[in-house]
Amino acid sequence: MSHFVGTFYLILCAWVAILKPDVKSERAQMKKIIKYLLIILAIILLDQVSKGVLIHLITGRVPAFAPAWTLIPVPYLMAHVTDFFNVVFTWNPGTSFSLFRALGEAAPIVIVVLTAFVIGFISYYTFGRAQAHERLPLTFIIGGALGNLIDRVRFGAVVDFLDFHIGGAHWPAFNVGDIFICVGVGLYILNWFLARRRCVCGK
View (cartoon, rainbow, N blue to C red):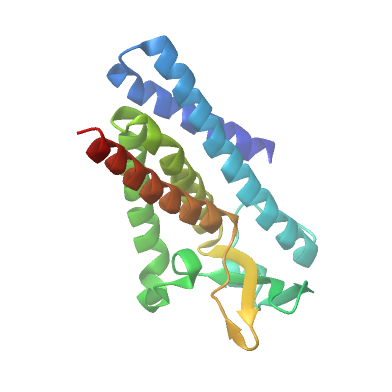
């Protein structure tokens, strides 16, 4: 775990170094950037630790890298919590909420490249161009997306474990990273609507 923390710290420092030339009031802006980078790091750690605990419970170890279905070849029902919620373990070779499985064997490479590009673009916008009300939602999206991207690099697939259902109808399993992505998108839309409303009312 300390190895990954050190790696994340170096990545975050690199982001700060890249984005620094675009910062106007350097000291004040740097503090804000560091605050959001720490939020991203916290989301990644929460996401990775929650997944690591499940992997350790099943295998007795948490490898840095391993092929997903070689490490854990079948899904697991970890705990039946309520009549509508289970803790499970399943691999997702697609995207958030198990979408786009149809990409097949090319999915890991295509999604890693696409995800990295999107994260890079959102990160540039968040720290270089975004308005104040946009930054926290985008930070949530970046943190959740990075958590899932790390899974893809480590295992070739993402760990999903939160399973909500009504009877036999199950919503696709998801994880902590997915939660932050969805919350971030929801907050972004809400903030955009409120900002637009204030602008209209101010005219």
